[in-house]
Amino acid sequence: MLTPDRRVLLAALSASLVPSAGRAVAATPGEGVRFGPPQDFSFDGLTALAKKNASQPYKSPQSRAARIIQSIDFDAVQKIKFRADHALWAIGPGPDPVSFFHLNKYSADPVVIHAMEGGRAREILYGPGYFDYGASGLDTRELAKLGFAGFRVMDGRNRPTDWLAFQGASYFRSSGQEGQYGASARGIAVNTAMAGPEEFPRFSQFWLESKGPVIAIHALLEGPSLTGAYRFDAIKNDSGAVIMDVHCVLFFRAGIARLGVAPLTSMYWYGENERRKARDWRPEIHDSDGLALWTGKGERIWRPLVDPPRVMTNSFMDDGPKGFGLIQRDRNFENYQDDGAFYNRRPSIWVEPRGNWGPGAVQLVEIPTEDEIHDNVVAYWRPDGDIKTGGSLIFDYRLYWQDSEPAFPKDIARVVATRLGIGGIPGQTPSPQDKRKFVIDFTGGPLMQLQQRYDITPVTNSSRGKIDNAHVIKVVGTDRWRALFDLQLDGNAPADLRLFLRLGDKTLSETWIYQYFS
Image (cartoon, rainbow, N blue to C red):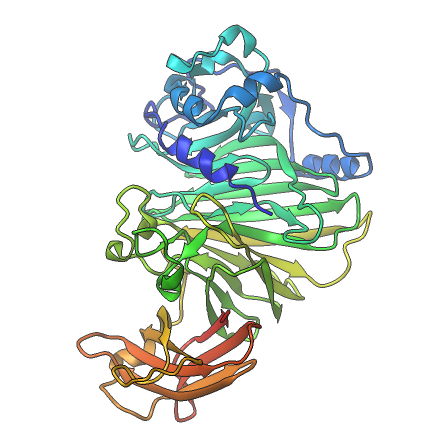
């Protein structure tokens, strides 16, 4: 199961942002940054360390002041402010400043952070002087050896916000083009939504290096079942999108039943497709509204997210995937009416494999939720083959944090809305009680050039039950085309649905798939 603590922590952190001290000069610390002695560093050395650690028993991180850390709750986190002049690269025109997170009950394990320059690394020495404790009531004399919880890359254009952050286990996140945090990524997922407990490996050490507009982040991953050496090269481009190249080398201490590569984590409570579950006054509440897939054979697939009645894991088999992501396609404020959380601004995250990942499956895990504080959606790549003790794997991929999936093809339409309701013909009674109507809106691609016509075919399929009354219309006064059909079911087992639009022998749209629970 996923813990809600990360979302609680993010809410506190977003309320406690502090202005940065302007842009920075490479390798120029802030006034209060303290360093340890320089040491040689290379990614090859980090990889060798990860491999060595994998041959030794795992050691859990030791808390240095568990009682104090557990007392730093949501309210206390908001009262602790990082001192901007203590940021790494805080002075002058150069890389964006890097500030540090304080330990707290939601992120209680300390990490070691280093600054790099010219192949030499120096540890950034922790001290309570990095923080202004204000009205938190904490005694700084008891905080001398706590350590940092993680770090954030601040926007150096004199904005009091950050655009990239690493904190808690192997979680990291970006605020994307519209400056609003939502879905997160992780270094790795281990045994997600299985019968036993999920394992959460953690980044225990970081090495930060400025390379012009790119920040290079090296990280050591440690967990009971594996270790890893990671390199992240991240840049915020002129459009505000954050692009991150990831290279990881994994070593296995133990066999793993379900390994999740390039995992993405998000929240979905309800959307326009699940109005009957909407207990809140807001029309929709979600960080992401669908899983997008680009298969190795070139098919584009859209799977709207659902809040299932029980934990569900769906596998989408593939060979050499071209991409997948948790996407927030609906970006219209009117559909959320939330001027605090701004769900319409949440970034989408897209994974682009580099090189051939071979056979495996994109797995989507959906967990029932009754509130928006829970991260209840995970998507990742599960490679074929057994993960055995002593083995190793290497993966390269690119992450995009932006409004939509990158480079969506111009020659097919995409799904923009999924709605469900009573079957039959509106206004005619009695309504059939054993049918549900599905309404899927498409736009873009070749549909943009077409006037109203009635020979576009909705190609439909259901794993069970009967589909009838399937047809396609153009929505008057819009650029949308609408596919409609009725589904008749017996029993309570889920039905897997599939639909795409075709004109003659030409495919007009991506493939819509859906898991329906009656």
